[in-house]
Every structure is written in C-alpha cells, then in structure tokens.
Amino acid sequence: MGLIYQYLGQYQQAIEYHQQSLQIAREIGNRQEEGRALGYIGDAYYSWGQYQYSLHFYLQLLPIVREIGDRQEEGNTAGYIGVAYQSLGQYQKAIEFHQQWLNIAREIGDRLGEVRALGYIGNAYQSLGQYQQSIEFHQQRLNIARDSNNRLGEGRALGCIGTAYQSLRQYQQAIESHQRWLNIAREIGDRVDQASALGHIGNCYQNLEQYQQAIDFYQQWLNIAREIGDRVDQASALGCIGNCHQNLEQYQQAIDFYQQWLNIAREIGNRVDQGSALGNIGNCYQSWTQYQQAIEFYQQWLNIARETGDRFGKCKALGKIGLAYQSLEQYQQAISFHQQSLQIAREIGDRFEEGTVLKKIGIAYQSWGKYQQAIEFYQQSLQIAQEIGDQLMEADNWFNLGSALAKVNRESDAIGAYRHAAQLYQTMKLDAQVQDCNNAIHGLSPQDRPVDPPPSSWLNHLCNFLKGLWHSICVRLRS
Image (cartoon, rainbow, N blue to C red; front, side):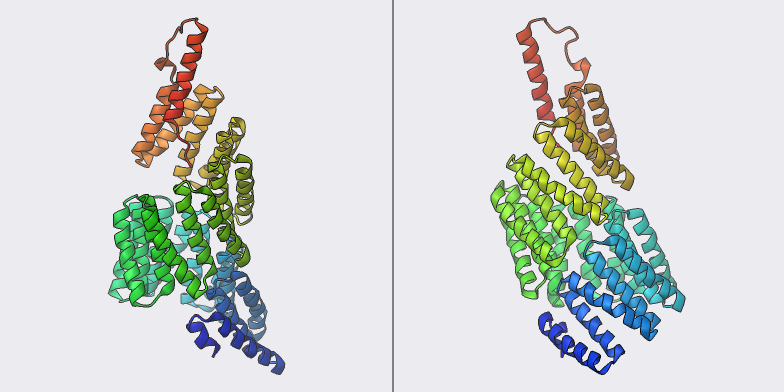
C-alpha cells in the first residue's frame, strides 16, 4: 500500500504505511525488511522534497546493507545518500558518497552503477562551479555508455556535458550537445528525455537573450510534460516560460506563469519548488520597483528554505532580500542579508555563489558611498572569478572596480580596470558592454580634458562636476 500511495504522490500516507512495515520488521528482527522499509521511507521523503528527513533514513539504511553483505545495495545506498546531500547543497559530502558508490560499482563490475555514479559526481562538480571537472566525469560516463551501447545513458551524458558548457557560457557548444541528446531521445522514443533536452535548449536560448526561441522550446517541453502527466516537469516548464516573460519585462504575464507553477508545487507538496516560485514572483515585484511586496515573497521563500533544509535556497533568498533593501537604499540591512548569504555559500562550498554575493556586497557599499570597502569586496569576487574561470563575473568585477577606483580619484587604475573588462567582454562578444567600458574610459582619459584649465575656482568646480556627471552617466554597476 505504501508504494501505491508513493506512486500517486500521496507521500504522507505512503510514509505511514512504510512506518508500519518498519515497526513490524524491527519487532521480528528481519534486518532485510527493515532496510527495505527504511529505503522506501527515504524515497518518499525525497520525492516530497524533504531532503533532510530523506537523508536521516538513508543513513540508517547504510549499516544494515553492509551488515547483510549486499555490495550492490551498499553502493546504491551510498548513491542515495549522495543525492540527498546534493539536494541539500552539501556538494563535497555528496561527492564523498558518490565516490563510494563508484568504487563499489567498479569493484563488482556494475557498469550501470558506474555510469550513474560518474554522472552524479559530474553534477556535484557542476554545482560547485568546477565545470571542467564536471565535463571530465561526464565524458567518462559518455565513453562507457557508448562502449556498452547504452543509448539512454549516452544521451543523458551529452545533456550533462551541454549543461557544463552552458555554465561556461559556451552556448553554441551547449546547444549542439543538447541537440544530440534530443536526437537520441527521439530515436529511442523516450518522451521524458525529449522534454528534458528541449528544456535545456530553451535555457541556452534564454541565456543568449533569444527569448522567443526559448519560449518555443519551453512550450514543446510543457506540451510533452502535459501529455505524459509529469506534473513536476509541467511546473518547471511554466517557471521557465515565466522567466522569459520577465526578461521581456512582461511582468504580469510572468507572474501568471509563476502562479501556475506555484499552484502545481502546492498540489504535489513540493516545498522546494514552492519556494522557488515565490522567489520568482518576488523578482517580478523587484523589477516592478515594488520592493516591499518583493520582500514579502522573498521572506516566504526563505521560510520554506529553512523548513526544508534547502541551504542553497536559503542562500539565494537571503541575497534577494538584500537586493530589495539595497533598492530601498537601506544599505546596512542589505549588507546584513548579503553577509548571511555569503556565509552559507562558503559553508556549502559554492564558489560561484560566493563570488556573486561578494560582488553584491561591493555594489551595496559603493551605492552607500563607501568606496574603499566596495573595492575590497570587488577584489575578493574578482579573485574567485579568476579561480573558477568565470569570465563574465571577472569582467563585471573589473568594470565595477573601475567605477569605484574612479570615485577615489585613482583614475589611472580605473582606466586599467576598464580596459581589463573591455578585453574580457570583447572575448565574449558582448559589444554593448565593450562600449560601456570605452565610454567610461573616455570620461576619465586625460587627453579628453583641458591640459591647462583656467585658474578660476568656480570654473574648476564646474569642470569637476561635469567630469563626475559624465562618469555617472557612462557607468552603471554590473550586478
């Protein structure tokens, strides 16, 4: 009965039946049945989005399968624990358990387990912002899948490689990988993977700011999800379509799609998705400059993230509240929330998010007129961007450094920072950003100002005022 309720998505009822099975197994001393019940309870909590509870039961299962001596089940259980840690944003712990799974799979010759473990390790490195390592593990997975003629595994490995390229902002390579995945999914008639591949291609076009093309792919994804009755994918597709409308500044349409997403998340009891949907509605109100309403939605998201143990969601929600207070020019509160977000990013080892939050703190200090503190945080963010190879983050930090350095009259250093930014933007073919850099440099370059300004003090003041005004017009911080 528990499995039937679980299949129907009625997780509370499923857990109640599994708990009865667990109690009976313990009473009669049947360790194998005890382990099976623990696994089912862990699965139900995981499907319910309650990852901390899921982890609790999987950790109880592991010593039982070791005691029984079932190596394959031991490997699988280590994998379940790794997946739970991954969902909680504890990526290093996830890698530790997935590596145990991988070692056991190789030891017993479980090629399917080996492929899956490699994939999860690749995904964990992806979440840590270590994209080249992610590609290496997924490439190993791809090679094994091809050797064993596992077309499904081959397609999914290509999809994960595409996602890593997407994170590296190499969108054309990402689209090529995802398109190959889509082709394989169509060849083998796998509607679930077709939907996933379409969604990822949509993500690439969204990142390329080709929003209508993105919507077209997301709509195909949504149609398949509805055909096969996949409520989770329906919710995700609706959220992505909402994102496109938000980027097109069609905020009411965006909110409509996010609300559909939120309704499905509530129906199926997915608390993590509820939080994400609420956060995205908050983003629309933030863009609409309705900051107090934005904070209300972000706070609901934060509450859910705390309840579910979603560390990454908590990190993001705190950052969003910080941005809203920043928009209200309440900089002390903004920095306080950003600092909480930064602490979590460091605890979970998310280098990309750490760099992003440091940059936000820098922007808050600069908006507050505290330029030296801003420079310090931009430099910390810049260092992380260089370490993880994120060119856009690096370029944005150079640009923001240029702006802050100009404010403390370090014009030569500011020009150097803008030139660094321009070179990186040029590499990424971001022409508008290159022009912004050139405009900022033009506003600071000595050759563009009189060599011998008139001695009149009022005229000097006027020149300095116009210079500062020109620089303010040219420069908008990179958030």
